[in-house]
Length: 67
Ligand SMILES: [Zn+2]
Image (cartoon, rainbow, N blue to C red; front, side):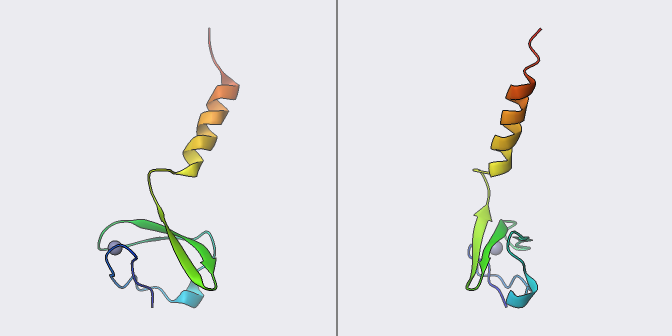
């Protein structure tokens, strides 16, 4: 059983059912957590500093559609 690091709600997920990189959403507080490692199981809140946004920004720069 996993507990939400934010609000201690039971996330209803077994430790052996998750994979690294998987994202779990807390049904109670709505926070998304990414599984960083599975042994020991470590969750990281997915939020404002979202990495994928940086990658998208770089792609836009390469495109550079200045007319
Ligand atoms: Zn929560």
